[in-house]
Length: 156
Image 1 (cartoon, rainbow, N blue to C red):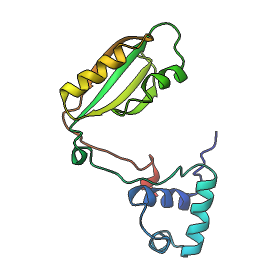
Image 2: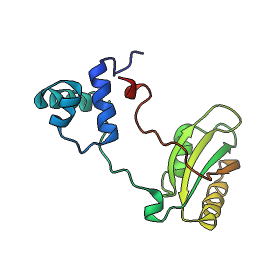
Image 3: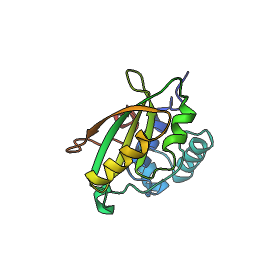
Image 4: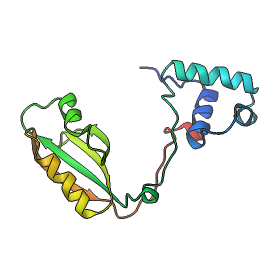
């Protein structure tokens, strides 16, 4: 499948918006060598094609009281579909991301909580689900890199 970002200027625009979505089309245009209207047309096309899904504020989890990051490997009983795994964790606000994965686990969950006690409660909720077989947790000690720009986009 061909990348939806085959154009180097589009990759640059996406990288710039990923870095700071509040910058103006004119500011982006200065960097990529286009007029503001040309940048807007490209951004509109990137939104329509599904490359740009939306815009959000990046919030420091510690700033909102979420001091504990953890990754939970979830192994399920029997043949549990991705949709069933999503249903297990979708309504838990502590689960900030969920992925199906290869290996011994069926899913990898990124969890953010206030503290270890809240993390334990999240683990108990997950383990209590009838489809859950076992979990394995890794608590993050420090965040060394948090790259939100798509791979390769910052090179162009």
